[in-house]
Length: 198
Image 1 (cartoon, rainbow, N blue to C red):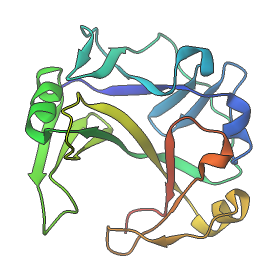
Image 2 (cartoon, rainbow, N blue to C red):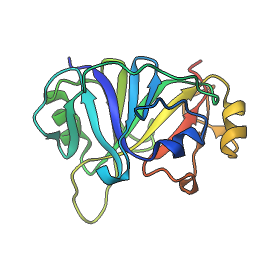
Image 3 (cartoon, one colour):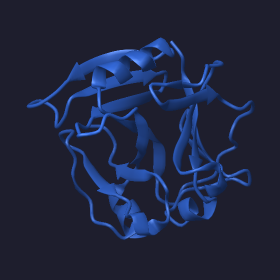
Image 4 (cartoon, one colour):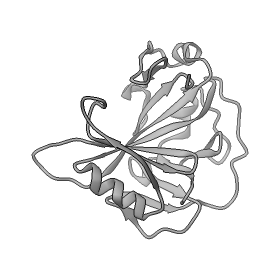
């Protein structure tokens, strides 16, 4: 199984720092065993690659994958209490096609399901410490999968809420709460902050 080491995100480090993330001088955010590499808007938009512990060829059904850069992120304290990446979301028009492509790239498909137990046809694929949540969104035009957003676990969601300025709501997972960072924060990827697992 391949293991995720980091996510490359085309964002300005200052936008994440304003949300209470500790960003180091290289534009990296250490979150448990993973890192977010903020590579700037000139690199594109949103999550530009899932970075793995091994060399990979291209993408998985449209989802960019690449080998993680060498070295480790030093880490900086997070005023918002960020602890770890909870999961990353990928949108697709075909759950099984995308899940199978991620499995071929070294992922471990842990679960597939759909309504009524889940809000949409979904698969959960593990890359070491990271879960990729594959969510199918049907439309009139077929499309390849794309990275949509990232969810970060924080120690105290009320502290994070005060920094972000958004009220939490109940999450789908029992006993947890979540807040969605508004686009006005200046991020090019969707970001949610979530209370720890019960």
